[in-house]
Length: 268
Image (cartoon, rainbow, N blue to C red; front, side):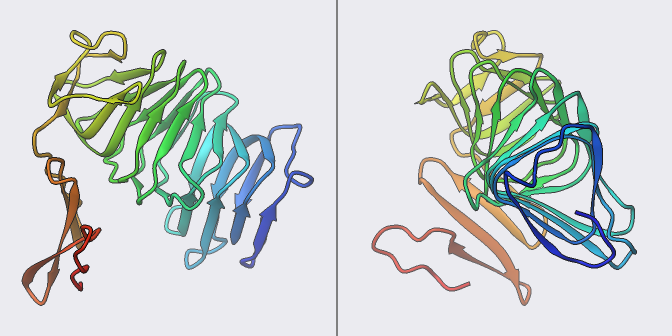
């Protein structure tokens, strides 16, 4: 999983088990499609030189990380692409690495195993994530991913900042949403045991079985979401469709991100 030249490695159950804590250096391309990698003290993106590029694609299997977390060489390029599989913790760990939730093989699962996983980098992409197992997934970054966020029974998802959740937040009996901030966070949709929460503001006072902390979760009538950069996404819950705005030759044009039934998708 390390070396001076880029390479591709498919992780399989027979090659992926480790019994002692070790650091793993990514210098090329690693594709994990199955298997269990345990006790990785630190997953480190080292492109070998500043022009290099390290890539880790997770679409299956499990990767359990230690106190070193996930880090990247300053000035080098990297990609952490998560579309399925599980990222776990053998102890508390944190990471400032940006991660793309691709959804290629479903949502990625974070299993803290009774510990705390803290992610301060940006989580982007069209995929979602699932919080599973005891412990806490603590999200502190300005995330832009548009997939659903599911918190299973016995698990805790913690937000440390206000902002917007572009996908749905899904809670079940025994799960906890810790709103560890002062102010309001917007959610495109929110569900408790499969039942959509009505338009309104929710907190530890009116939804104490599921929400802790001092923050509030807003379910507005018409939630407007912006993603900075070339594109901005606007979600209109009442219309049940997404509009994508983009700039071209200084003109503001629009098209349906998903064409409604019976209508032809407008060209970009």
